[in-house]
Image (tube, one colour):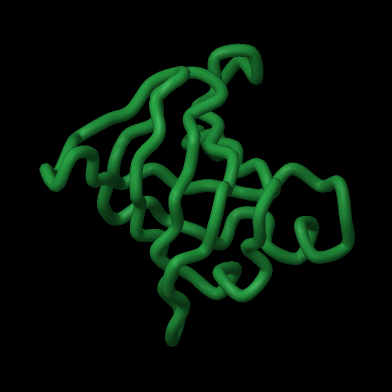
Length: 100
């Protein structure tokens, strides 16, 4: 997948975090992001590197409706699953992983 078109989400806030799952408010900052996609964090920090490739986008909610996708510059509430949720914090950018 070309990095210029890869789906990217920037974490605005982490609303809820539990066993391998987190609910976050995000802004789509690149490409089209779809439910079911795998994400890794941009390796700007040690925590982000540890989270690489460990998240799956389970749900996207906008205006109290579940959506299949989100594109720039829209915001949404998302549910992310995976071991990397412990590393999510404001400002972290998640990039869709190459499925090849």
